[in-house]
Length: 581
Ligand SMILES: [Ca+2]
Ligand SMILES: [Ca+2]
Image (tube, rainbow, N blue to C red; front, side, top):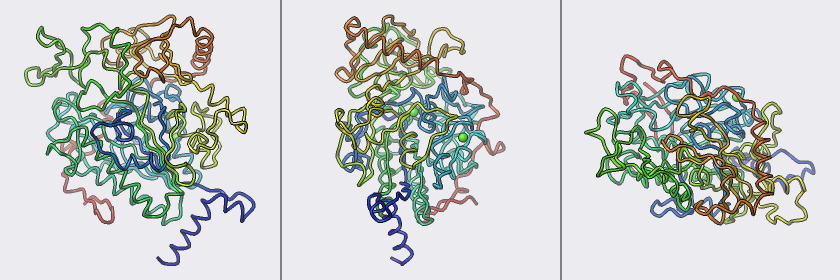
């Protein structure tokens, strides 16, 4: 090791060992940990080994539990991709930023408002190097790209994996073959359609290179890694709606759900090993979670609901209601009551959907779409091998990172999340610890989470959205439901509950047995007041996801029907350098 590198390591060690710094320098020298956020797409609670996955082998993600904390009561902030990402990056309910009621489609006119302050913007201001590798899904017109929201660089796809065609896999909404799934580098489309046979390897190479470069330039870094995995590809080839590189496709040339999970785990392992190889593990905070739960109607192409069955709904929804995979519509026959067909190609593509009462993952706010696998590692700060049942949320990521980086939040964008550093560090594990400050005790014990959803029969928004409203809230062990429905796109009508449905979702994670409301009158009154206050606190802004126009579909070469010959895109696997000829 040369002298320069030795000195750099010594500096980092001194910087990030707070105790040493305090002892030697008396005053606090600012310590800025590196931050890595892994954010899976549509991954359910027990799709990861350490959370009980029955088949997928995920040693790298599992290692975060061995080396850090397993968060057993982590809640997604929203029922869909774009909204969940907006919540993560802003620490605010998406209704405040206008990222509702749907997701940003490939022809979306808007994106997350530049007025919103993202984690990347806060950290960049503090001197961090910032990078996003993977799926953005917060707008793809130039003004909405990650590079205009605090990220120095971006390598990834602009929206969901079903948002465009790949070779031999044409989406229902683009049968004219003009919406090929693009791959971005910074502000440029560098490949279209994206080549999925080596995307994982390229993601890994780009992320590892960013980490090395940041360390070499002695900058703390923020790596936001929203995986494209394990979101399904588009219909109609339902039998091949998952994907992975050749290396991970056991059913060559196609992959199944397990392959996709294992490839994602491999990428996480590549990033973690780069951190370990550079000997910066103790200075790097790593968090893993998912944006929302399984897309249940996609059946074997989606993950598992685990213990979160949503049984009350299954027992109460009309049996004739069928939930179909993406782009398919119900077309029941006497012999096949759950038959779904692909519009326009009924004879070619037909399959069986599921009962709407089972469709309690993505698009709903049943527990399967709220409770996310979550793990965090930060050696010498977070104790190894601990678990917590404290109720936390994706909304908490931003306030916690601001605390770790000693940043004060802007008064202009009030936060909904709370700083959960003491839960992560287990620094005040005992709820009755006398040293816990009153404000913190109140902060955790009175925690309430609100869950918004569209899908009402009537309301100011165009069908099928109707109204966007708080349909459920969680307070301690309890969850109250004001309006039940399966995933928002299904035909079952939202059912209004007065008095609300009440579950103890810790004792009854399947939401099978409603509690007797008359035994919990005071609790309900408290919750109703908090919900009312929360709804009143929202300054309604225009719902940003509705405006669409084909002109905004990312497509850089109209003459070739938006397709880039793959040989024009090169990556040096050794150096990680990307280039286009
Ligand atoms: Ca998602
Ligand atoms: Ca901004």
